[in-house]
Length: 124
Image 1 (tube, rainbow, N blue to C red):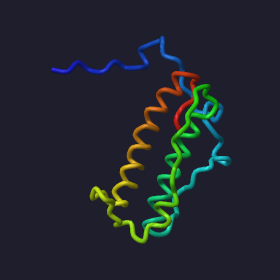
Image 2: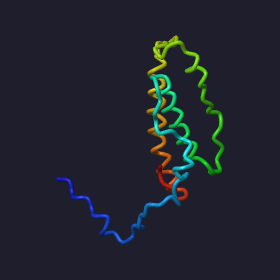
Image 3: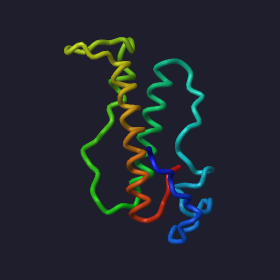
């Protein structure tokens, strides 16, 4: 039998969490990410990937470590005649885009935890 989870209200050592913009990365009016509204499959996949990359940039802003060498190549997607384009190893461009969105989303969640631990900023 699994013991019940303790009630966080019973733990006086936990800090009070309050919602506010002071600990967010950017005020909603200044957020560079979109709210969707993409038209067409290519624009949707490329747009969500771009927004995931922007999210990671926001979470890393102001940190001391160097983040270099990771450069997106949007021309590959823009110039592809079809998202069903298959590479020499059989990989389909559409699947690569979806996988990249998935990976950025997963690691952005990890970045939330790390950034909150570093300076208290929380996910957005």
